Length: 170
Ligand code: AMP
Image (cartoon, rainbow, N blue to C red):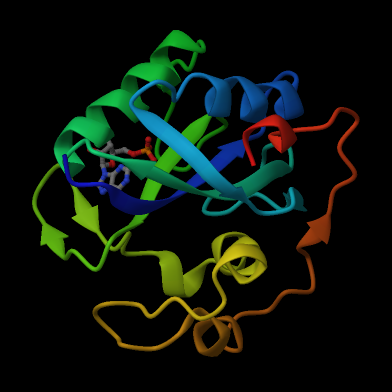
């Protein structure tokens, strides 16, 4: 079976945020295997200001699942972990987005890969810098290091985990 390399962003701003990231990572197996973890960052809300700060992390995974099956899996993990629908950019217990899937480009109603907001989001580019600074965006053909120069990193603070997260998967 083909093995794909995928980058997934994780975010949480409700409840025990650190546990939500950890539970999301632990729910990926057996068909999705984490292979690298960024540090965790505390970041201001995006899109809608009146809500708590987020914890964000990016992970690299290996999987044989095709893109839409992976999306279904991530959405079902979000649901299982207790995410309830709010409004666009509203607070969420856990959010999992597919950032990159190999060098695949998909533009459909349900799924856009690479994720269309990558270039605008320091909370994605800063953690990507931890684990894949040389990864080339397959549409703009710019490496992550170059994309990261164009966003303000001022408000992206490294977060000190209270528990070890993801180390057992590395
Ligand atoms: P969200 O509010 O971030 O959970 O995303 C809402 C919807 O965005 C999902 O139900 C997906 O169908 C859609 N979507 C489009 N592109 C992506 C992507 N690259 N990763 C995750 N969700 C995506």
